[in-house]
Image 1 (cartoon, rainbow over the protein chains, first blue to last red):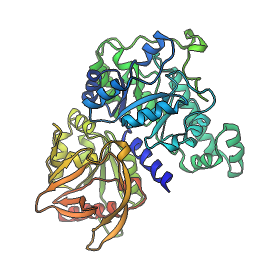
Image 2: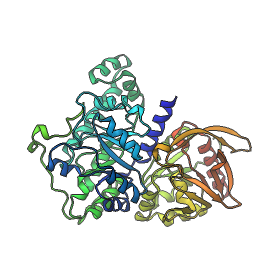
Image 3: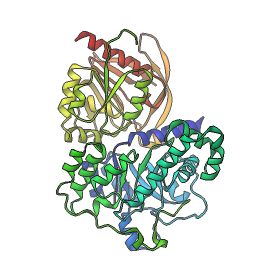
Length: 294
Length: 200
């Protein structure tokens, strides 16, 4: 009963964020720019993914001072990232009163076998996935929101598209299956059969499904929403562009009005330089973030 | 609802849990329209302002030229604001330098119960049609109605606090019936829309 109530509250907050844009920020000033541009939540980070990628080394949870400073200046929800499997970082983030925890492949994983048991936390978690099986495993661990991973810090939408298509294709496949085929499908996906049944019934994931990792323009945001993302995370795409404030506002508009192509065209005009992108095959396999986690 | 006029209930779809409201209204066989702009709004007989982030919703309403249109709408037709929507239509908001539509004589405090860790579910007491009934109340980073004018009617309460109220065309609630499968409050609002259409 307690778990059932908790997950309802957790998914409830995720529902409230739909259609809005969640922006990575590293300072109170950036958080304010994001809020004023219409962000629905901010992700408080020490470094945005593009810089984490450039810097190398072990990437960890942000300094609590950074998170607190950002909590002070905005009224919208504040999220923060912990390393995959690092439940002690998650406990710290919960103690800081963040509104959502992202157990994120952008940071260096702390556990190569197990993710955090998210059921025991009061704060909701969002987790990344590359396909339906991964999404359902995270939901089985208590995630209240899923985001397709994409490849963070690249400004390249190709992986985000691949992962969203994989999830949506997986859902459509389940809907085409007979009930007698669902347990085998669950085995093949590596996911609990109850969740597979629920996906068949709902025709969607049982938690909100957002998109992350590579959104750099308003058209990218519209693309991901049309592919089924209920909203988008924008990491490096805003504060690595030449005019962050304008880019932030434009991506917010395009996310809301993703089917209004005149509007997306209008807000795309004169935004200056989008973040310089990286081709995925130029990234050595060991430096790719999406394969972290399972 | 046989022999009733066909009405369209709009749901502001700039951001928030508008799909959840649409699901509940579908259970009631009520025709819905997602509202993205003024043209959408013109086709509606009533409007739901969903849960979401009020800061974001205010920003988007202004940016997309809907701020004045929604205020004018509320002076003529029913609006139901849930959570963030309640903040939008309030007369004033304490502790925040935030605009509001001033459509109902209530003062609201944002995030009055705290951050997400303080969100909760509990039984609430409805008084919709003259009798007391309980319902599941889901409060997520919820606001609180801290004062209200004399002509505002209380429709639900929780531990001594007003959590659902109405005045003229405007119905406000600080919790989320759309996250349950309980249709009572939405049914009440739809009936108000029907009454308003019949009157005009």
